[in-house]
Image (cartoon, rainbow, N blue to C red; front, top):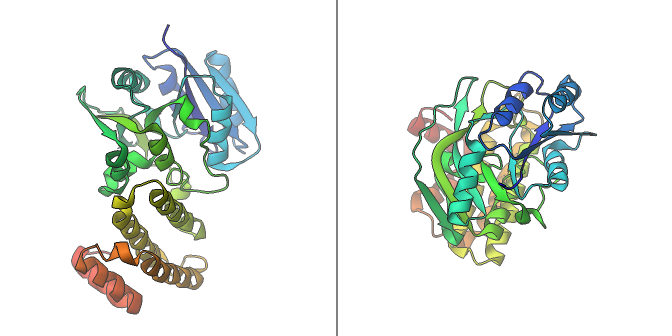
Length: 325
């Protein structure tokens, strides 16, 4: 018999999307599943929808808990899971019918600890993935390097929800409570522990884009937790032999400071305080990572210097090069 796979679905304020998400999981061609719906204190109709889904199919389990955030909901699901493998699906998204089957067979065929697929931005229509069965394997340094590739590729690697994991990876790893950008703070640790990942180019996961209530769409002080996650990652890279990645890591941190600064428009709460903090952080990063930042292109280093002295001029130059800030 094929092993049990646990699919963990954190649920909060998604009553318009939840049934579609669960239905896509119940239709999986891989049938030996437990689908764990973690109702994270949702104040809408989600708790009742979860219970109705459980009555519909015995593979669905429901946990109702006080609100603990996305990390808390995922951790609850991890602790409750009985499967040999774990997957995460966000409750406003949906997956192709062979999402679990393809990822499981990749793990079985390659001996990897993690498998991963592409994702597609969707607005409710069917996933239009390819049937290409080819895959890539990334190991060690090469795997960690993917977190610093082009934005779309780096996003594909860092997110929690387009992957299947061996359960033992989570023996000591959990998502950080009370924080957003929890994937940025966790996935690199799973990569280090798992050592090897199999990646199919097939787009088997649908990331729903019409839902505007997502925390990732709103800029606020909480977004600075992205910087905290990357500060932690840099320390991890230094301590675990990934020094080759440090120039890219410091660049990503500095670039994010500038991006966040430029997003602090007048309507943002605490605009002035946030701008000052971001400028101070950038100055600190340039000092702390000076040895590695010196390895970056001259143009990049000059950009940081110009921004530090004249952020308004930098914004105008950037607009001239890209057509937008």
